[in-house]
Image 1 (cartoon, rainbow, N blue to C red):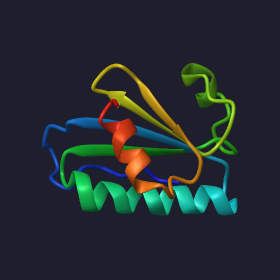
Image 2: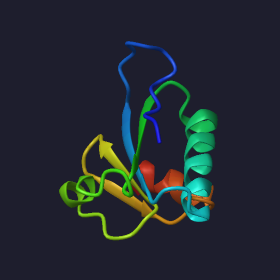
Image 3: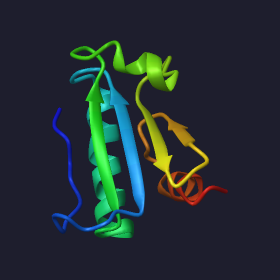
Image 4: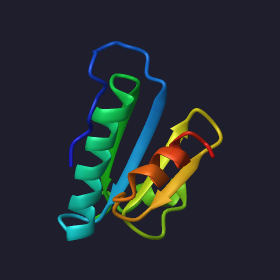
Length: 100
């Protein structure tokens, strides 16, 4: 999985998001598609989304305390927020990203 950068190169991002997935598992693929769609529709150029495949980089989960995939972390702004699952509930994802 590749890193998705903000729409405008060099632009300051408001949100730093990290999505942990497990290879090409159905829930992982849905989570990537849902996260990308939510970011594109609701966040425009104000985000940076990094996708981490734990099958390729298992040690990355330790730093963020990831025990289940898919998990989306909002790392910036603080406090860190997390959403677990395939991100199909857009309203819940947006509420969590907003810090509520």
